[in-house]
Length: 72
Image (cartoon, rainbow, N blue to C red):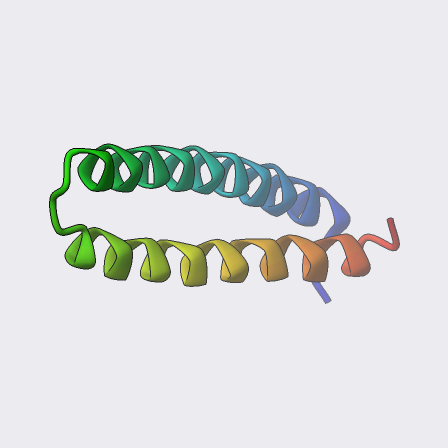
């Protein structure tokens, strides 16, 4: 079993990752909107967005697991 103090540290790290991921997603969505508004192809950027969304889901899932371990 992981010590509660370590779980708290892991939770803080997970929270940072979730926030950072949220920021990256916002920037990527803005980039896609600008490209499309300018009539440019955003296929590659949309593919990257899909990867970023997948990573974000893993960050969120990790945070949920840690919260469950902490009984929060």
